[in-house]
Length: 153
View 1 (cartoon, helix red, strand yellow):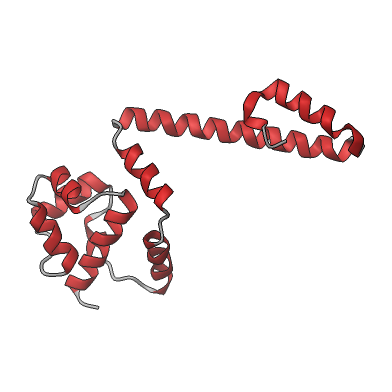
View 2: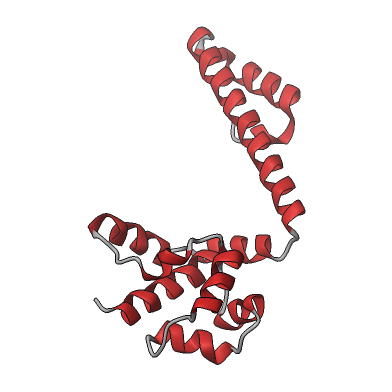
């Protein structure tokens, strides 16, 4: 695989991972969309100045755009290319918010996940101690104590 092919694959992986169009990437780094199109098609590769911008905007180091894929990374690349429509929509929506709000959203989501993990652990521990006929009582108690996050219990 040549340098242009590697660079083109990396640009495509980046676009899919971020949920960006070629036009969106071009806008973010301040170049013409046709330049990004040429990169993605393997016609040309980013200049040094554009690599600086790409690295700043994406968080990927400059060398990443030319780093050959080894067998281990090929599997990861395939996972990135298989992003679901829901994941893509989530990423696009998330990227529309300013960085500060993105960080707050991540924090909130992590806190909700931790809460759910605690609820599940508590429920599983209680399930082992409570006779089967008392499960409904436990479900009602957990739902009342922790709110609508427990609808599945």
